[in-house]
Length: 247
Image (cartoon, rainbow, N blue to C red; front, side, top):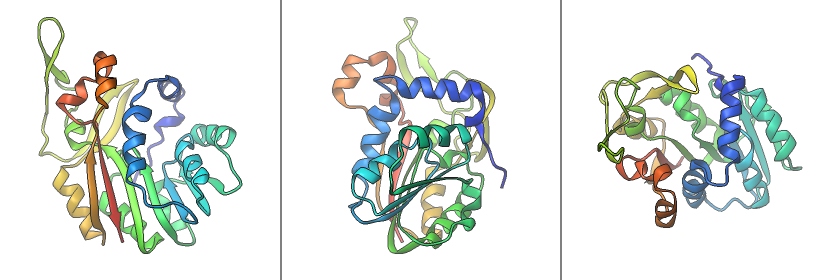
């Protein structure tokens, strides 16, 4: 499987860092609260965080009493930030692509991933490798871009709007055609892989997981009222989808 490392692109990393540093952002307002609510008890657990990025989730697990946290990411820039800002005695950061999970020794009680699985070409193979790394009864909790979101490929406008620019509804394009999507987001040819919801579900089952919970992104009502220009698109289409699975 090809390895994509867009976060070591200077322009992309700088843009991502600026977005995350804002007091109000999609990750902190939408993604983190939902995925955190789906986690099992973390105390004393051995945890693998795939696509750990800047290390915020790894630090969260450490503070919650995890026995150990291994955070892996392919981006040297992300890992550099994580080591500088989100380090603890029970956290190890390692440069490793999720295509190379077979290089990891040991078993885990919990595997997590926050918005990283969009970049994997063979989703089923990834899930099978994660299953091998889990102890019996262990959990996989992850978020990724919602298939309704990845169905948009930049050919048409994301939204149909009124003359005043108010979003009326979200546009889909080729939802039923799966595979690589290239769009312009900060850089040209930003790559993600689009899959139908049914494909995600069937791949999890085929990899040996029991799906215990699924959620779709939503915005707290007070945030929607205070920042409508930023968040009202979520009313028309969910940006993220979340799963809690058990081996």
